[in-house]
Length: 262
Image (cartoon, rainbow, N blue to C red; front, top):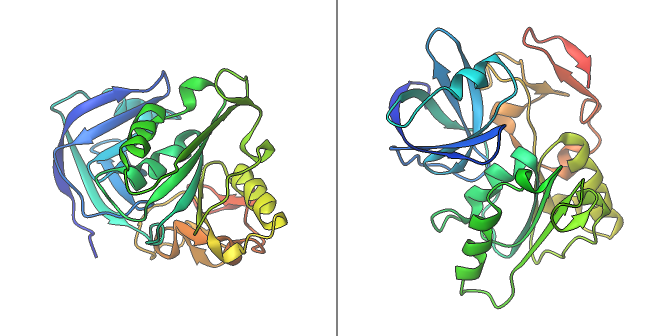
């Protein structure tokens, strides 16, 4: 159990847009795509963040904690523990579908020769600026000489890049193995339902869930979804596991653990 803090320095900060930044660390974490780390800002709080590479955290500014995080500069230190949770399964010739900040953990799939391998990406965002890592993913697939065909499809709410609409509007590319989906829960459910409607086996569809995590090791129960601990049993789940859960895409828990409607 990796429950001890270690300090790491920020070596690079990439500002994707006003609300998204990536922080490259001087520590290479032994991690799988889909896992997360807990980041501590002394005197502020501790929060979970997905890894967009074995040495990179991507952050969306959504509140007081992330506002403080955005004040960090290159050379500053962070306290982190982890990685935690289950990542995407190791398989080849997969299709990844990401929306907004959900693109970040999918970027890990093509970072540093990690497995599983992805040859097709669907990137979705409100605008072009939310298509995180578009250039990096494009280059990674172009440089992957192991496969003859790679594919990137983009869709934006405002039509500023690719097709105008949302991910579930698209004719989704076929996967030769699994589908990895990460983004807002409503988006993931709609995309998964569309795939199942085209006779994709739900056990070949994997979703990354997000909940309010505290302990990150399955003890406190604050991230429970119909009995499943997102931190320890997930955050990556097979769609066959979550599709019929009463809380999936309907309920979430507050900081105090109260169950409320989404």
